[in-house]
Amino acid sequence: MPTPALSPNLADLIRRLDQAVADRNDESCCRAVKQALIETIAAGGLSLDAGTMAPTPDRYARRLLHRDPHGRYTVIAMVWGPGQGTPLHDHAGIWCVECVFRGRIHVTSYAVRGGDPEAGI
Image 1 (cartoon, rainbow, N blue to C red):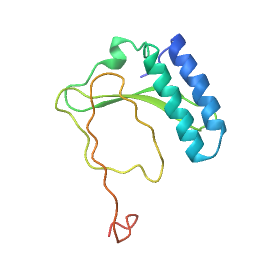
Image 2 (image 1 turned 180 degrees about the vertical axis):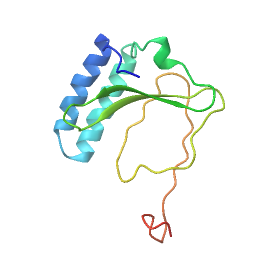
Image 3 (image 1 turned 30 degrees about the vertical axis):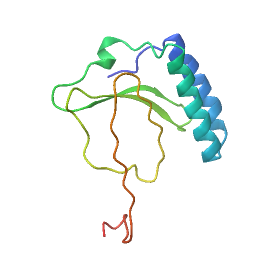
Image 4 (image 1 turned 45 degrees about the vertical axis):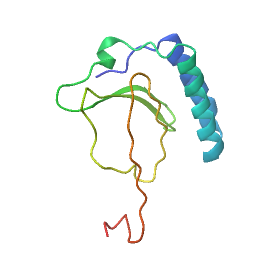
């Protein structure tokens, strides 16, 4: 699926994310990303077309909204239908920020205690 055309509020969010990720300190970068998302949603959210927001019948959908040309981040819309979820997974040491655009999400977080998660023990 091709990347959708940028709506003005998505273009503004991307401009703000570009500024946030320019700070290579994870803590301040994450704080700036969070603030950009909060302010974008509070100002009326994102204008995403119906096709981008449509769930698929058998599993959640991941739709690319923007890929930073410098490889610093991506913006994706993850769309779940009623009763859909994701299996237990990790993010391979990469941090992410989630923002619920519409509806609700339930997240269960786990911490590894002992063993070596990279070796699966």
